[in-house]
Each structure stands twice: as C-alpha cells, then as structure tokens.
Image (cartoon, rainbow, N blue to C red; front, side, top):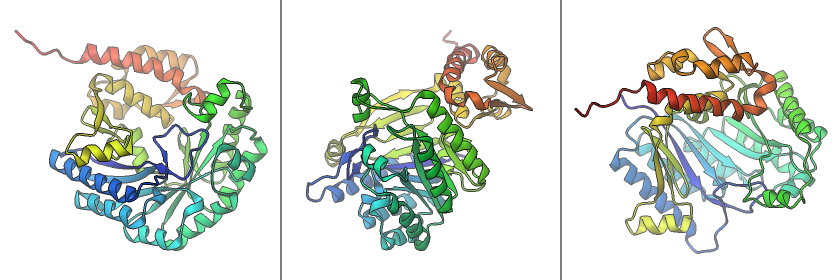
Length: 395
C-alpha cells in the first residue's frame, strides 16, 4: 500500500511584508485576473500530479500556507480544495488554512467550514499594538479575539494562534500578557516561535547594521521557559519545539512532516518529498503561472536524499523532543545502537539526552540548542547508512 501523503498549497501574496519574514511571499498583485490566473495554475499542477502518480498515496491532510491564504478569494480556495478532494483527499482529512486576523469575515469562514476546513491558524504574533506595528503587521491586537470568535461562529472547530518572542523591544511582561490573552480565548493550540534573523529580511539587514535593539540571549531563553511553563500549566503540552496543544488538537499535517512523512506541494516555491526525492517549484508566482500555461515544467531544483534518510529522521525527531528508537528500527530495519553508537554515547554522557525505556528524551535545558546535537547525528547517520547499505555487485 502506498504511503500516506500530506498536501501543501502555497498562496504567495500578502498585504504587507513583515520585517522578519523570509517566506516566499509577495505584496498583493495589481494585475487584473492575477488571482484567477494563479488559481488556474494550481488546478493545472494538481491535475498533472494526478497523471504522474505523485498523488497515488492516500491524501491524509492539507495545509494552505503563504503568504496569507485568506486573501485568496474564498470560492477559488474552495475550488482548489475541491480538486484535491477529487484527487483523493479524504472527507475527514485535516484541512488547515493560515489567516491574518485583520481580514477575516464570518461568511467567508463559514464557506470554508462547509468545504471541510476544520482548522484555522491565525498569525497573532503578539497582543501589543506597538509591537505589531514595529514588526510590520497590519492587524491590531483587538482583531485577534474577533478572529477567534468568528472562526467558532463559522463552525471551524480548531484554532491555532501563532505567537512570537524575542522581538525588538519586547519584554517578559509582553510575552506573559500575550499568553494570558491567548489562553483566555480558549484556543486548543499555540505555536510560539523565537525570532530568527535571516540575512535577506528587513530585520536581518538592520541587525547587520547595528540598528535593531533585541532582547539578550538569556532573556529570550527566559521568555521561552515562560511560554512552556504557562502553556503547560494550562493543559497545552509541548509536542514539538515550537508547538503546544491540548491532547487531540495537535496538527496532524505537521506531525507527519516531523515524522519524515511524504508530502506534495503545489504553488510557487512549494516543496515536495515523495519516495526519497525532494524537489521545489520556481519561486516567482508569475513565472510559475507562465510555465504552466506554456506546458512547461515548474520544478526549479531537486535532490535525492536517500543517503541522508537516517540522519534526517533523527533530526526531525529531535524537533519533537523525543527519539523513539524502537520506531527507528521498524522504519529502517537496523537497530538504533548499530547506527548511532558514538552520538548516543556522547549525547547521554553530556546530558543532552536521557533514556526512558526505548525512548531518548531531550533535556529541558538543552532544547534551545538542538542544532548542535542534530549535526552529530546527521553526520554519523550518513556514515552508518553508507556502511550498512549493501553495494550492488556489478560482477
């Protein structure tokens, strides 16, 4: 039986570009029919994927990201979702749409709910109006609560709030207030991200020039600790580095990605991973549509990642803060200790990981430094995979 596949649909347009944003996002187009053209391109790419077999596995989840997918004309978004249903997306599949809290309407949300959207991920970021303005967001704090209430009235059962910490000028008290407001709204899922400075962003360039006043590294760690303590006390457990949920409200789409599940991306800049092949589309929405209209391919690059499979599996498991070594053995047919003897010995001796039965658990105080441990496992995984993979006999 073919492995389950998650679907990602990229909507590349936003009303503004935030100072920290490194996503493939562009300002809303002024061209007439730009939305209709992009929708037609998405439908064409989905049809092509059906014919080439990229959607041969059961489609277990779908996520619309961006950009701001709720800027997508609602009937066009429903049309794309309908095409995915015809391609095999199950009636009960988890369907998530990302949203900006300032541009939602009950009628549009109700239409999405009728079409099967059961999860809305709202980009709140903070409940401080001065901070929202400073980071380039176009909504106000008061919009967030209204957005959550509209989603509930529309029949969307599950709501996530995205929050950020480590922002320029942000204090511990700002983070505490945001958490308090989020919990008061009764959401079952919170994603809390520490600010990461990417060189190509507005914030990255300002930081390089010494123009960005950021909290200290220790302050950011304390903010992260406050996030975990507050949300855990309220019944939202940490199931990934940046994600907290009440039991049963975890993002099934993201969980599959963190378990190295297969996914198929559609749209400008979207990434896909089927078999052991990873590929990505051209980033420009205009070039993406032009190529499809001309009958040309939209793949910008690809790679075979089979040699990295074991190390990638561990890297993604580390994001969930636990490594199930028994599941690793079932996945790859090799005992954990045969593949990662040196990394495991080092990580346990240095206090990064501890054994709990057949599971390795990341130490709480090391959760902010996962890249350091991941590098060791990636390197040893690649070496072990070459050593343990039988060579083809050409003689």
